[in-house]
Image (cartoon, rainbow, N blue to C red; front, side, top):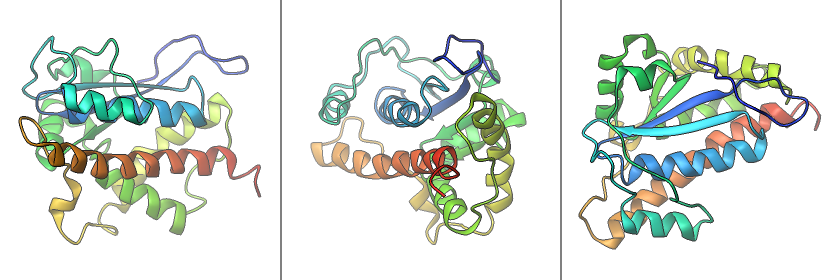
Length: 216
């Protein structure tokens, strides 16, 4: 659902709403939230709002310290973050939901069935985004105007759904991100190693269509 906001000059007043979802909403989904927001808004400034929630959230908690430290090491910030429980109201505002595991995606769709074609795991969407860039380069509108970005993301969910069966993971578990909660430092590092390339692939998709036409 596009939300009224104040954007950079030349953009109209709408935003694309993305929601990331994990269990406690203190490790994986806030890390993804902050990285996605930074990467997507670096490409299309002011066009994206990214938030997060948990299926069994530790409501009111700050980001888990080790995850926050790893985020800071990548130039991100956990400042102002407070965990919240996933609700139908939160999902009602979402244009696209990115879950951290298949189980979380299932919870999203059960809570809001309208998101069946707009809910993916983060890593699943990254794989599909890469396939769209490589094999379906004319499948989405090009351009960086607000209208073009909005049109692109309005079409993206159904497009991803149409390609899902063509580009499945060899191992379904590859669509999941490890839960590092109460685990050692290596588990947190692995979380980052799984999330970061996925975030970058999604940002590459936006960059390709936002700037590709101008770059020939």
